[in-house]
Image (cartoon, rainbow, N blue to C red; front, side):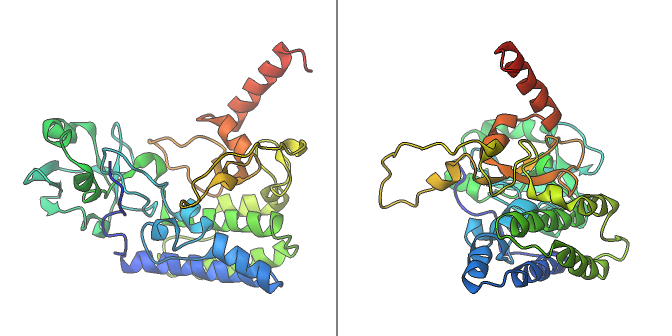
Length: 330
């Protein structure tokens, strides 16, 4: 399977750089809201650090805010998925036509080892597709004639062609930016006990209102304005409605039995705690519509996130209500 970094992970357009630069300025505002030096260092290391790369530096260069808000999730396997990439990356893959992307002309395989995407008569190699100025989609029919070749590709072949993101995870740059803001405010308010959220909101609004990345985009959007009017909800897990810094549903914290871990490997056991913080989508992502935005993106407890699987919060609550009823626990 593809195991390496996204193709051209360090290649950015000038627009990409300016967007990441804007999130870095937002990070600085969040950083300055934390007065304790050691606590500020912890927030910077774990959440607000920025990386001028497409893949957030494979999870080491950037903090959690950039990885979750701006980048697609890490992907490996026998497919040309980027192992993280910017969510506004212009080349996506989908199961059927989608309204916000134009199908490519055709897909070629050069020398049986390199994918070539033909768009408006021009041939693009994997390391060049980031330069596309509009979003294009690769559809199932583009792959059909190449299946017999692609099924024999080795790990290194897939890694050298990891340049596409799922339409499911794509979004507009301004939606990614506003998601970054929502997630950042949630973290400093709930986990770092920053109380001057109103001051932060005003500073961030002033910053993004003056963005010059695209003069046709007016920020903050109505979606973000609505969310910021109800800012107390940003401190809560969307499902159990307990604060992000509390245990799940305010239940007693469970004691996990110890499990042997090789001392020569980095352990991620803490990420498996019930109350660890994960990105959540109030409504599940779908290919046909862009909904990774400030209205739909939140942080929540791992237990709550896992329990939702691929369902909305409303569907999850209906399911839980049924389970409670049939067990006579009402």
